[in-house]
Amino acid sequence: MRRRSPKRFGWVGIVFPLVLVVLFFLIIAEPINKKDGFFSAVLAELAFPFQKGFHYVSSATMDTWKRYIFLIDIVDENENLKKQNALLAQSLLAYQEKEAELYRLQKLLSLKELKQYKHIGARVIAKSISAANRVLVIDQGLTTGIQVGMPVICALGIVGKVVEVSWHTARVLLITDFRSNIDAITQESRASGVLQGVSTNLCRLKYVSLAENVTEGDIVLSSNIDGIYPKGLALGSVKSVEKRRSGFSQDIEVIPAVDFSKLEEVVVLMQESSI
Image (cartoon, rainbow, N blue to C red; front, top):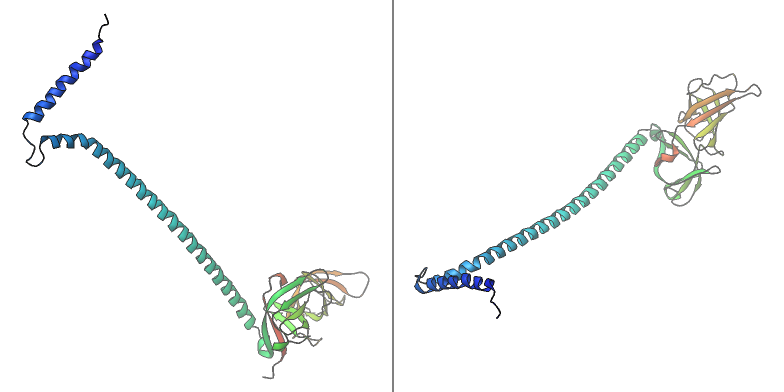
């Protein structure tokens, strides 16, 4: 005969008394309040763990959502701040450029030659600085009275002269071009010669007598013998001097006063003022 498992009787022994206890309380217990009663309280108690769990999950979800929204707001705010910083940086750069331009223009306007000559300001709009051609293009031409042969200067000294004109632009031959020859004089010894262009940043002072005492660092000025450039404008400074054993003149190298690679504004001297 098959024997019943003792484990099955064990579960019955535990569950049956519990059922009796529950039935007893359901029958004899007084209501918790007039409206609900004990059974409703039991249901509420059984529902409490689920309600608590749901509240915890919903609270955690809401907190996570709030943190997510907060992070999105921070990201958006950071992007807006980056854009504002970029705009401020551009505004600062534009302000610095305007300030630098104003400083250059103030230096130009302080030139004494502007009181002696009718003149017009111009911007450099193109440059051609090569071994065979050293010219720049300015934004003034025939419509404003520019003519071939007019001298062009800046705050640092002589730039060159106008060699070609169109209605609204003009080409300026730089003093560093080999085709440029300017009558010059040294400031210290008053030695005279002709300044000719050699390369991008170099000129040569020709025809200076061996008897003249020219030294490194001497300032070279325009002499106005050629009738083009006003007298006393800076052309450059002496870089080196070599007195040849043969010949009648010295070999003098001159560094231009103007850095043409950074030139942005110039003044064209049109004619002497009658005032």
